[in-house]
Length: 257
Image 1 (spheres, rainbow, N blue to C red):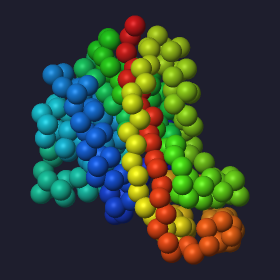
Image 2 (image 1 turned 30 degrees about the vertical axis):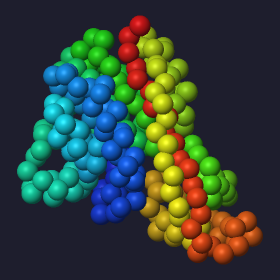
Image 3 (image 1 turned 180 degrees about the horizontal axis):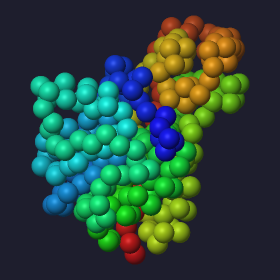
């Protein structure tokens, strides 16, 4: 974590793409963003990471610039493009975006603001670097849904107190943007269904692959996994059986009235 409070994903660079977002979810996210951002001169992605969204969006002709606090995450993106910069990439903290005022025609933040304690400073920085009236698209990393994944994660969080350090709900961002004069429009949630076993979910918790667990010490993490496993065995029985999970992510488009 930097002095600005943003959570770096350096530690997740090697496994991020394998554990975040199904390909169909990424495709639908890219299609949605391309529709909103198409025809604009210069767009900023905050938290560009490994380029899971940015690379296919760039291939659709969107003029992009990416910023991320994690050099390792952006290095993984360059591996996908044979070491080239597919578009301008800048290492920097989203709470202090290193661009001049009115530099961009649009911005988006996908699965990021829940990771930054000073997330309202990010909003202020976005409004500073955007030209007046430019749109902002936001979706949080925390998802709503149903199934064992959400149930197991919720039980683990109750035991350990683990939680993302930043914005906890889209309603918080709605209120902050409203105070800054921007109106939020709800976009249709992008729903996805996946089958995964309780055993695999517990393994991901134990391997510390989710950012909300990074605040925990080793002893608390181990205790949380052990107690959650015992609860899951009583709840689901055979932990190796794949179970259906449905996920959705809330999306907002913020614009001036």
